[in-house]
Image: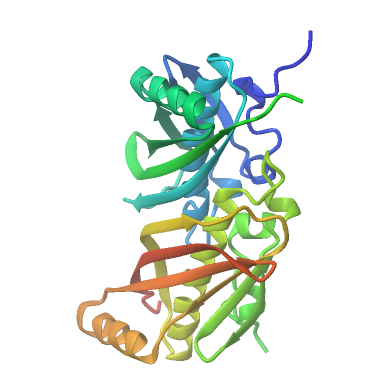
Length: 150
Length: 150
């Protein structure tokens, strides 16, 4: 059996910084993707999580959930963030978890746009938690292009 | 002679992801900090620079230039981003350079706030280039707290 390059366990295999950050998938169900990363490879000068790692974990959750939802619909697509806003609410001193989900309505609209225009857009909210507290939020716009079969 | 932990060459020594990204300082003069990072440790599934690395390099330029300007004024401070907006303009297929600068007026106001309120805020625009083209912009708010001498 051929391995699936987009299956949750190896979703980030081709993203070098995700490996350095030690990002892993905690779960994926009902259109909701949950990721985690430990503090140590993401630590900054203040002994807390580096802002760039926080925004990376948030953008990976959004990117990942759109990629997986499209895969479920049988669509191979490149998903790229075009704009993001990040709100850093408090310092993080432990493991981080990020969560993003996509509604059926959002995915249906995206698939319609891809079919009609060969290009789509989707806005995703992702959230980041540590030690039970909400620590950061991201709102990001992603552009999506179907990958042509060769 | 004791080494200076905030000198440009080792500005990011205590930020683990900056090492993984292979960030280095290209130059610092006239209140302007320029950083660079190679593509390979920052590559994504599309063979271009990962969005999280782009935002990290932009936030490090802003964080770094504020830290260095305060250091020049004899102020040791923790600088932390509280909010950022990133605009990803085009895919990046080579080394990246990020640039951020702070005006004398901005730094004077920040120092005044730190003196009067023991806390300050500053907004920094940083820009990212690759192969001579502007590829991403960030507008970020940083909060600043003086480090008390022990």
